[in-house]
Length: 251
Image (cartoon, rainbow, N blue to C red):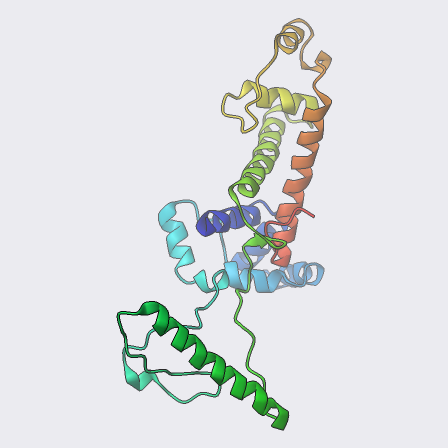
């Protein structure tokens, strides 16, 4: 699920005209353009430093290559690991090395390890009374793959897909027609697409109205209009908020 979410994050950056302009300014060496955009979007320079030019990330191979040097941005660093070479055991104030004799009673072994670690923490925090420095906070990723307190779920990704479907269909229709299209036309175009994510289809009345008077005389369901408006607004927010390092965030 994380890789899918990261791919959508990249797609949001691709859909951001601001990010595209910054990438182009970097590519052409336009320092003035970079400075101007950075002043308007203070986190833009840092976002670009982390994500880079995402335009070539189009295939699975390209994504894996891109992600190979950036996984640390999205994943929590493990604080517990196996030590193979004892030479790695260098004294550090915030590091605990243990020797554990493996036995066939794993529950008892885990309980003993738990007790030993808790004893260390008790001694550490007790010593804080005498001016000892506190331990560092548990590491967290720079970019969190969740929305609020909720992990990114299939339902959330489904909403993101719908937002992008509506926005990209609108852009495509306007590119072909050379004009702004209405939300009614957008809904009808969705219904004519058998692969639309809403599973919408034309009802007989809509089909008859189109054949008789054209799309301008079709009256669509108000719930459908509300849904289209919501997804267009969400798409704008997604592509805006990734410039602040937040995704998915449609607030």
